Image (cartoon, rainbow, N blue to C red):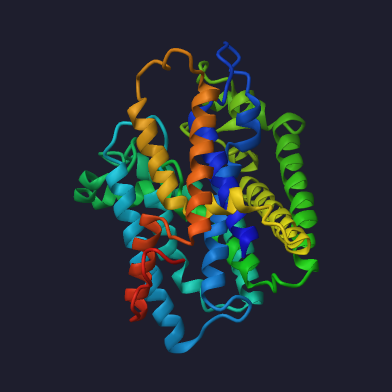
Amino acid sequence: MHGVDAARGLALLGMMATHSLPLFENNAALTPTWIGLAFSGRAAALFAVLAGVGLALSTGKHQPLTGASLWAARRGIALRALVIAAVGLTLGGVEVNLAIILVHYALLFFCILPFLGLSLKPLCLWTAGWIIGSPVLAYLLRPWLLAANSPLQLGHNPSWEDVGTPDRLIADLLFTGYYPVFQWLSYLLVGLVIGRLVLHKAVVPVLLLFGGTVIAVLAKTVGVLAMEDWGGRAALEAVLNAPGYPLNSILQVNLTGIPQKGSWWWLASAAPHSATSLDLLHSSAAAAAVIGACLLLGRLADWLNLDLLLPLRGAGAMTLTLYSAHVWFMSTRYLKPIPAGWTEEGLYLAQAVAAIAVGVVFALLKWRGPLEWAGHAATALGKGRQPAPIARR
């Protein structure tokens, strides 16, 4: 469905923006920029939710696969995850000032495998329980992991060297790193729920758009009230003791790197990248709204007989290749001044235009991206099938 690919393209451009453009103004108050307020936390969450949607669409849509077909699909997904992990571990060896999601993304694929055969009702129950319960368990476990003789946290992007310390690598991926997979599994579960709906029914995209918007606003509102009106921020400032990090700004943009310990009030925040219940609910609902909007635009494009989504869906169909190219490009700029005549905004726009242009060319030629073909070949191998030619999608 072109709408799903278009949403994936939006997620890619949003993640590139958070990597390339400042999230805070360069002042003592660390005033959030509009990029930080709009995209931080939401772009990566949309990327993860769409992974769940894609897995649902490839495993039976609204009627989950069963029996041998389901196990074949699981094998294919597991092998595809290994390809993604290999790419992520390789990129983890470059010097770059951004958090690379690919290894976490691959682990999420493994974690979602047991849920692929569930029908919609039990899947919804698991999703709700995971959103509510996983942040509490993570809050209890994280201090124990960080208090180990050698804290079980990497402090950098996972790379091949970290495979030699599997306890630290797994703890970082699941609980103590930038994208805690234990809580982030909620996003794939939400995506799986969305993908199990009958998406071709006209009412479903409308429900996703409006229902997602309402839930996102309510979750964020409760989080802001908890922090500003119910005493949460004052309690957290008392235990944080980090004067270089104005908590008010951090809560609006990115809570990563802040030790969430010493107060249960941390769990009442809806801050981006806090991985609390309110954050997971807000960002996954926002993702659902974006997916609904893209599906509706896809319907409009079909009605008008115009490929309105081509610029986004082209890039969205080859996100692994384009994301990896973006990480490589950012590594070439690491600790280097902006080239004369350029600005941060200009460098971002150049990357965005390049990604869109490459995506459009590959879409028109009906080619897979090179890394997408590697993932497709692994999936086909797991299913016991012959991979399709690289030049056809």
